Length: 187
Image (cartoon, rainbow, N blue to C red; front, top):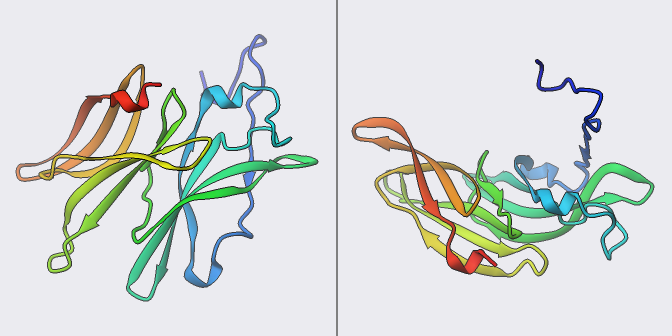
């Protein structure tokens, strides 16, 4: 059965359009990562009056000369256009792009983002941290370093665990690591 087909008893799928007018066109900024706070989407209407305010989070990437930057942005729907998403607020701006799969929203509502720092000499990944932001305040809740011998590519999770996909260089191969959700993020 097709992923896009549905039975008589299922609700129809929903699709949204992300406005691109807020992206910095001069720096070729684009949306490269997406995360959804699922239980937030099931709530009727938020205090802001916008359905789904803050439930959908995107990560952007842009380039200025030889440097890159990225943003973590919470989206909201436009009044009168429920399926058009625009920025609600920018949670975080960093000096590195936000790659595909680098965002996740926990069951408890924390926004997680992978951040990889590169050594200038060799331009190899050397240090990846996971940053956690509070969904309602946008404040940084904590950072955690990941093991250095793997190039971390993406994260996902649920039921109290986080899964990380990484690429080990020697011996070369993809790995999936499972970590318990940090206790600070379980409430």
